[in-house]
Length: 211
Image (tube, rainbow, N blue to C red; front, side, top):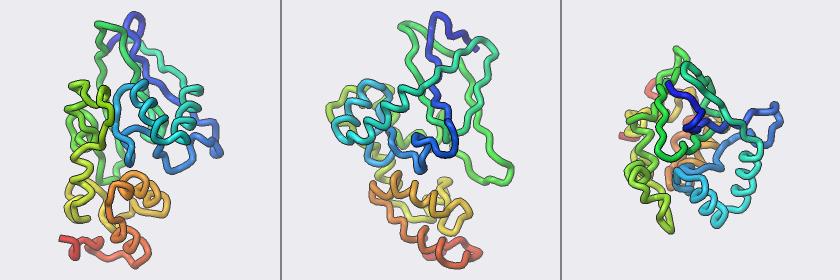
């Protein structure tokens, strides 16, 4: 609903060059808010933290920035992208605002979707501290309390919140690998999900034993 001229805030995107693109090697985990890397909503502070903690990830992200393209916009512009596209929000010029409408679409046969605005997924990122500019200024940013709470829930409890249950069609060797990087490093026991993948799928999706 605005124009980039005079306010900026253009979305940064990294186009995929093909099936063998090294920056799109699954799973995608080299980012703030994933695994043990806290979500820091400031490029300078985030990269400073990552450089000190994980030089390999820092170098990977430098490649992302070098290939980044900016999505220019004016009133009426629509940007469609999948969630597996490397992208980031960029800062506005001082004293400027950008009015947008964010929509998330899913395939009709999919039963789960998480939205960002005020949804549960947002609580994983210590959002109150971010909005108060605390996390970006902290010497040692931390992973959000909600994440630590989430990994301690049973598979059944997590499924109520939209996390795929053991035996769900979502799980395969690739999604389990991603879950290890996102949740396993924080202490989530993925054994029920791994066992259900290896065993014949039951009608209750392996939930009854996990209440």
